[in-house]
Length: 117
Image (cartoon, rainbow, N blue to C red; front, side, top):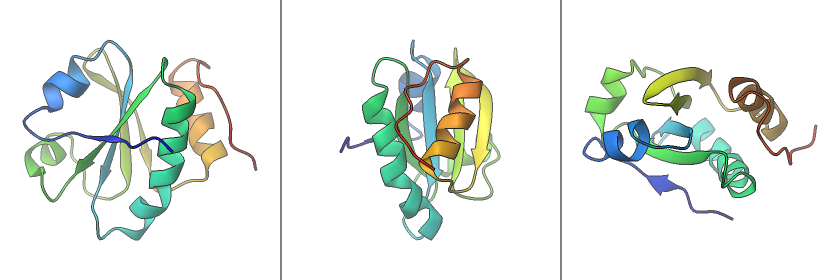
């Protein structure tokens, strides 16, 4: 399974906002049960879509500046960035097929789907 890159307050602009590829940022915390449940799903989606989508993680406890900048108050929250802007937000842990459906809509149907119902 793909190991997701961790981003920080210090490298968020470079790794996310300046990326040529859309980036899904998983705002999470190690004590958040639903965050831990969705992590392998996000890793699988990233592995199936390496040319279409980057998926990274930002620990909100260790990186409060970025979390506050984007108004993250509940986790997991996943923001999808394209061209330095948030183009969509997904709240809560969902099964793979639901995350893929949400991301596919936001990306205009360019996501490889691997999940089942």
